Length: 474
Image (tube, rainbow, N blue to C red; front, side, top):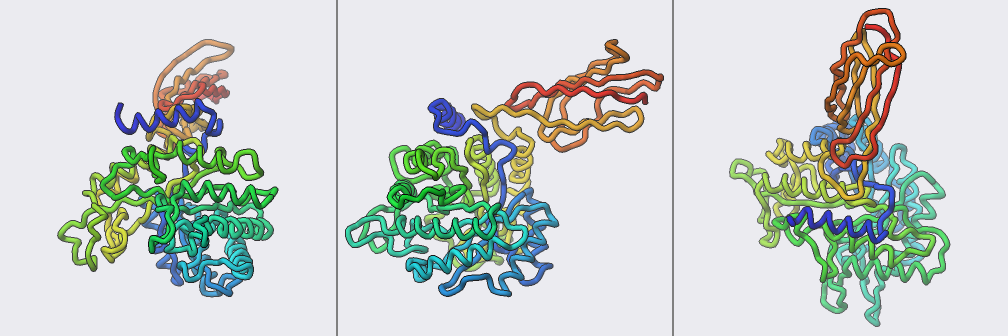
């Protein structure tokens, strides 16, 4: 059994155990986006130009950051302009905006009641920005880079306890200001040490989720603290294939560790007002760094860290495709965001985009765009438990009948005259979202004609869809 089939088998086992929801959040509805702050600009033309790069790559969503500083309770006029430019550019390109509201680093961790209430008010002001419907609270609170202290004097998890309080306060403030905005918690890093006093105190997502659930239960709260969970499922380094990144015996959580993540959420929250095993999940940062070709070296500065292990662009495209396939088949996953669209210039950062810093495309771009398109069409992967039913639309112009399915569909088209005489029957396939001429010529004779269509998804097929309609003579 290859690695991808093995990962899908674990999903099937999860479904059999009843640990996932019956409704599949992934499949063609999977939100495929990019984590990219290059779209943040005071200049609307710059924001639009950068957003256009996302659209050309096929992305349907963007996740940006919005930094809170102590004392701030509302977005500044300058940042409101930036957010407005991002939303306007996204609307032009049909892209959905997600915003992470976070403190810049551990020196500004919101720990006091005053700071947490200020943070919550600030997040609520972001949520009221027109066009923003998804808000992520914080960033990697399980790492000392963003959150200190991680441990209390007795070695307990101080970070999860304080973050639970912040998340609850922010949830309440956002829902009061903008009830329809989705509040996403976690934004967790994929690994951590779980050992105090190391000089780089961190928690694994496994420990953090467990402790977050315990703190929530201990609080006695009778309302949720989040509508969805976010996790950053980076592999140990870029040369690890997503389908091979399974960590059954460690506390790391990567893309292929989805069953472990759902189990943890169930153990932490099931039986409370906060959904657990049924909680929607976003993987809102996943990156694979690619090697820099000689003719592009001058665009970059600094030195690549030895631990990165970048791959060639063909492998980058293949790994991004694998990531999309995994998320597509994971029942409670709502979205996957690639980090980045455009490479960072500093080699100490991330060269994980599908464009170089001069905005020219990498050879991996075409493969990523195709995988996104195939995900939307429902054919990027075959998944256990996923049963798709196409939604058809038929139009007529003169003697020509045109079929459009929302996802790929195979069809049997039959044209009848009068009460039941079959004139012609044809089979075919339509590409999702693309109008396809049915191989039926409607006769011009004055009579009543009826069209009967039977449609099935060619991959992950559910029950057939039947469509009947009267058509005019050609």
